[in-house]
Image (tube, rainbow, N blue to C red; front, side):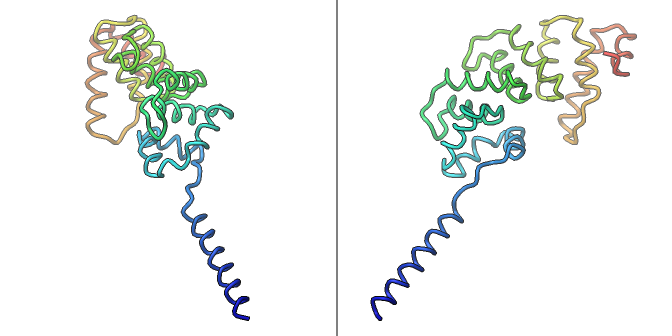
Length: 205
C-alpha cells in the first residue's frame, strides 16, 4: 500500500513538473507580433528576454519557411551575435533575402547600412535604391533618410516630388518627428518649382 502511495505521489509530482515546464515555455511569435517588434526595434531584446529559447524555431522559419519577418530577425541575430555565434556575412544574406521579399524594415535597414557604411562600404546609389523601395511602402524612417540624402546633393531632382508627396501624406503623433517632417518638406520645396510642389501636395506624383 505504501509503495502504491509513493508511486502515485511520484506520478503526480512528475505531472506537475511537466505542466510547470509547459507553462514557462516560450511560444513562437506570430508574424504580426514579430512585425510589431521589428517596427519598434524590440525584436532582438525580446529574443534575449525569452532566454534565447526560440533560436531553433526562428532559424527554421527563416531558412526553411523563408518568412521575411523571420529572415530579418535571424539576419539581425547573426549580424550582432544575439543568442548565436556572430556571422556578419550570413546575417546580411538573410537581411537581403528579407528585403528581396519586400519587407519595408529590411529595405530601410539595408539602405541605412549602405548610407552610413555599417557592415558594408558606403554606397549612396545602393542606399537610394533600397530607401526608395522602403519609402514607397510608407516607411517614414526611410523617407526621412532619403530626404537627407537628396538634400545633401545626391540622387536625382526628378525624384524629389515623389518623396515630397510621401512625406506630405505621412501620419505621426510624435511632435518631434512631425517637426522634422515639416522641416524636410520646407527644404525640399525650395529645390522645386512652386507648381511642382503644389502638384506633389495634391498627390500627383
